[in-house]
Image (cartoon, rainbow, N blue to C red; front, side, top):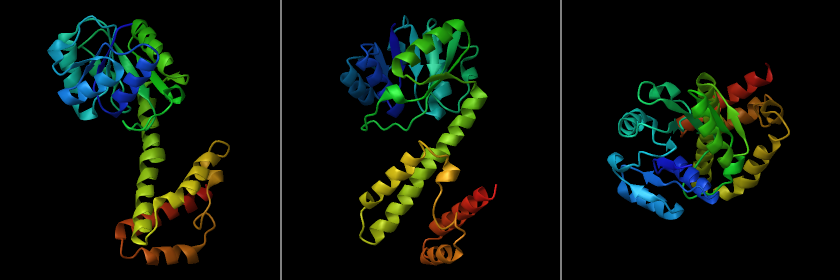
Length: 257
C-alpha cells in the first residue's frame, strides 16, 4: 500500500512515525511549509513535498491531517490533482461529506488522543474511529487503522462530533485546570511537580470507577466553609474564581442527579 501524508503537524507526525515503525513509511509528506515537511520526512524516510502539484498521483491512500480551517481548501486542491486512490481526513468534528463531488472514495480516520510532536506514545493503544463512503474506502481505511492501532471502531460522523466534544471536556478543559493550578503554585514558590502524584491517582481511579463515583473534594461534600475560603483567596483572580464557582456547582449538581 502506497500512502501519502498531507500535513506535518502533531497528528500527521505521529501517524507517519507509527506507519514507519511497521515498515509502511509514507511515500511522501506534504506541507505548505517546506521545512516542516522536510523535518518529518527525514525522520521517517519519506520524500518531502511542498507543492500539491508534486504529490504522486498513484498513491493508494491519502491521509489528510491539517487544521480544520485549512481542510476544505487542501481537499479541493489535492483532489483536483489526484484522481485515484482513497482520501481520508483525521479531524474529529469535520464531516466526511467535505469530499463529496471531489473524489470517488473517501472517509475519516479519527485517532482520539492528545498529540504533541515531541512526546512519544504507543499508537497501538490509541482509539481510532473510522467512517467510509463505500466498501472500497472502508477496506483501505480499516487496513491503515488496524496497522496503526489495536483499538479500532466504526463510527458515524454525527456520533464522532459528540465524541470530540467529550474529548475536549476530558482532555483540553482538564489541562486548562492544570494550567490554573500551576499559576497558583508558581505564585507561591511551588513547582507543578508536587501535583503529579495527585493527577496520576485521579486518572488511575477512572480505570475502575466512573467519574461520578471517583469525585472527591469540598464540593461533593457540600463543604461551603472550605469553598467560601477558597473563593475568597481567589478574589484577585476573577477568572479562576469564576471557574471555581462554576465547577463547584457542577460537582454539587452531579451528586444530586
